Amino acid sequence: MIENSVELRISSAPVPYPEGVAAMEERVAGVRAGTAPELVWLLEHPPLYTAGTTAQESDLLSPDRFPVFKTGRGGQYTYHGPGQRVVYVVLDLKKRGEDVRCYVRDLESWAIAALARFGVNGEIRPGRVGIWVDRGNGHEDKIGAIGVRVRHWVSYHGLALNVAPDLAHFSGIVPCGITDQGVTSLAKLGIAASMSDMDAALIETFSEVFGMPLVSEDKTL
Image (cartoon, rainbow, N blue to C red; front, side):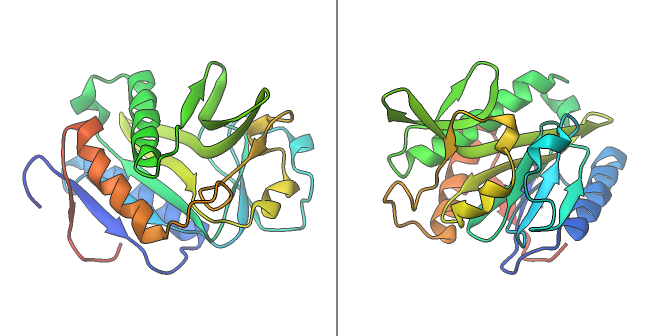
């Protein structure tokens, strides 16, 4: 690895959720021990729902539709599936001021900067975690979800951006507990972007926010 850089991994095939979590936890331990570099992992999951630490059972509308996984990240129910870029971020927050709120703001800024590469004005809203797109007439759609966990000041989980997922899959849950707004994607906004296009935007903007480049090791987790 190049000094003062973060390792980049990109998985071309969907990663089963339990394998993804196990790999993150292994990397968290390595970062804490100083035996593994920090990591940004870009991937997709098969269709599934995850329940964060504040998830309400009543928000799971179709419990038999897809597998449901309880997870230690913050937040409520969310959907992951093909066409959505999941970004797992394993960073040593001891190097970054031990400030979780600042870290979440950095994740938000990173997602917004990446979306701006496609001409999309992503925004944040007080009291509502995630990235939103103003659709006019008082209506907003969520295009990005954020959920993090921190163990011994090492972060994991991260964010998810909707490139071209099947938005009907979100109907099996109340996404992040929000009942009065919808979800959207680059495809729904009329933007024909590939997953590789999104990856390029995320890679280009990471250093703008975090001050370090992403460097690929061309290895699998």
